[in-house]
Image 1: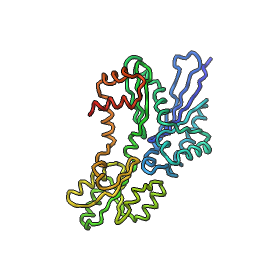
Image 2: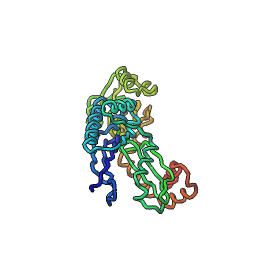
Image 3: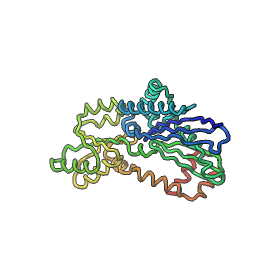
Image 4: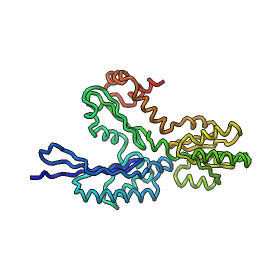
Length: 328
């Protein structure tokens, strides 16, 4: 008699991609208890918008709905018994995340959970990483996603602590805006500045302060300190690399007194004043962020073990601090 297969599905709405996984669980004495049947990945990159504007656009919402509808049809084809659909960092941060989750349920019948960072870290651990690492020894398991990074401490096969941090590959690149004053530049200098912007993949736009103020209100980014600088001539620099405009301005100022930085909105933070230029230049790039994580993981294991033995129940933040002290 042929063994009956039970199919289960998981949908992951991430900051970088949306995924569908269908696994078959063999009912009976089959040596293969689980079989991966379907694994699909659609690179929607919701985080590109959310980490820049704070919300998901109508176009991205339509793409998400179409993707989930397609996943639902595949789940029907494979006669899925049960599923769980979870959304992580981008949907958590989006001002319209809950609204879109309700719309997904109404339009597709798929109930979408927007889980918090700790639940995400727990789910990462529950994916049997302890079995992969071994039952003896002490480990730090780091899962770097598009919008967040989950860190778990595992000692002798048991989870000691875990936490989620708003650090991710998409978040580190997303939606940076700089406001600058370029009024006193002559035609030759302005042309040179625009050429530098083009070479650095920075878009330079001259704007009217009243219109910019209304636009900031529209996307709920009208921070009081940011609005205060909207006086006199204003230009905006748009970029996907946080420190690119700041580095460009600093380099250009070697030959000119302008541009002057008025303010910046980057990584969800507002920077006001030209004295913030150095701080913006020091924002980590994607490659630098990954290098920092690698350096952290290369710290001597004895530092981690001593921290674990001192207080096995301590918070993950304390352990990370112990590791960071190695790099100082």
